View (tube, one colour):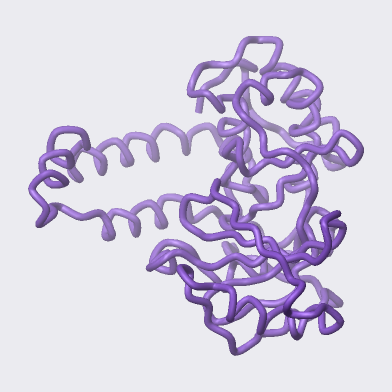
Length: 291
């Protein structure tokens, strides 16, 4: 049994640059990266645009000229995000997906981040996801992920419950700031309550025997890029891990936290399975199943 990501032989080696970026004053550090990645660019002509949709990381687009034909995305890891994001696995994920043409090119890593190719398109909103043409494209792209064999011949095993347990160790039980502490106690269920729910979920969901495949695991709307000429892309894959196939399915069909209608559920499942070359037995008796 295996729960790790195996990088295929022949996958491009990703260089590691000894550069550290200050997320609040990033230009000097970013120019050091650009000097290696785009040596023909003049530092004085490099323009930088900060993207604001990221939750845990800072994203900076670097380019020259006004057309943005060649943009290097610099992702600076958020403070202490290494506590819950496996950075080594993230790089492996990029390399695996790149080898299967499911991710942008990864140019390099550096001490507190990585650089990769910018994908043109629009970050989607919940209303876009419910468009039949778009959610069918999303399903087909998800299926490409699910069909990738990244376990080197071993039977893939999910470590979902182990990781959730690890997250519990990071949850604060109180804050010194009285306002934050009051909000924590009034709005967030206790750790004991959440652990009980996790155990209940583990006991009940494990009975579904949903196939364990390579999943994106982070299908927020903003993590889906749509380009009418180039179809849908799922560029952000921080959490690419072996999971039950229903994990990705559930994330994608309820982007607005509301149950999908039968038409959307059936279409998503049909398009997802229609793209997978190896048949999967889902064990799902209702296409409107909520996981």
